[in-house]
Image (cartoon, rainbow, N blue to C red; front, side):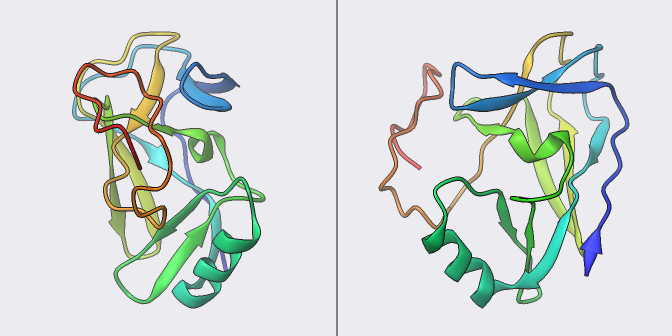
Amino acid sequence: MFIKGRINYALSNARSKIHGIGTYAKESIPARKKIGSMSGEVISKRLARKRVKERESIAMVELWNGKAIDASGKSNELRFINHSCEPNTYLRTFNYHVEFYALKIISPNEELTCNYGPTHHDGKIKCTCGAVNCQGYL
């Protein structure tokens, strides 16, 4: 099954100082507003964990129901939101959707970031977010 996400604000993807490609606001996004939901393939957590081991670049979010959203292939701009220990967005999973909301006012050209929380990396990847309160790892 494929979930087609919806974007509520103009976004773009470009090189990021944090990691690879990032997602940037093309317009001001008010605090506490839903930015949109990520597109992706709904798969089992088991298959998700297998794919994570096989790929270098991934965009995977595990859901509460034994499923995961794999946005590594066909997806939308939200696929490229990078981790930050001092994020300006947060994600919420709802049914088969991964939704992003603004924690504060996001200015045009500002990179969207999210604290991923616990990940499959288990602290093995160095964090490069540059935040003052950076945890140092993912």
